[in-house]
Length: 257
Image (cartoon, rainbow, N blue to C red; front, top):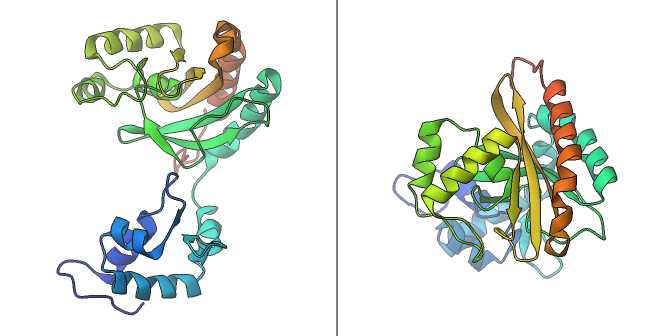
């Protein structure tokens, strides 16, 4: 691609990646000005590179003129390793059929959970997680299920941070959170009550393969029905056990999301 402005230490590839990296689940569409700001590039450079990305169909225009990820990138994304997602999806569908509630699959990516699959219906409670989105670990059911099975050094490092507090119900005290993670590890599942979003609660369980946590499966329902949360634990654990068995003989390339 044609070069952009002269910025020391930044190659054309770096600039293009900055543009593509400006999009996320919270910003699926951006104006050219916002794209330049989020990518840290001059407007003229952004305009020039966006033109080439549009011609290659890596970016496209929404009806209002804002930019969004194009079909060519979506097509390439389908080639990414997805064994975990492929193996787990039938179980997500079955769990949704049993409960009628939002079901999602997540993996740990750094200090966050990355949602890699989701099954939901029109009548299920609206939730903030979307496939491809990221959330903090400690306020989410899937995050707690993952965090509880990480090595001690990782948990200690995580708890030593200043923890986000999305709602007044979020547990951020390190000692209390450590005790809850120990309980999650002992009982095999996590429960949350309006810690990530007011109006919703969740149950989640880890997917373990050879004793190693590779993902977590969660079910979310309205807080008005919080008393029903415990009844979701049995079908949830049945689903995670099924996924664990399906993953027991992974290919040499690993699980992938």
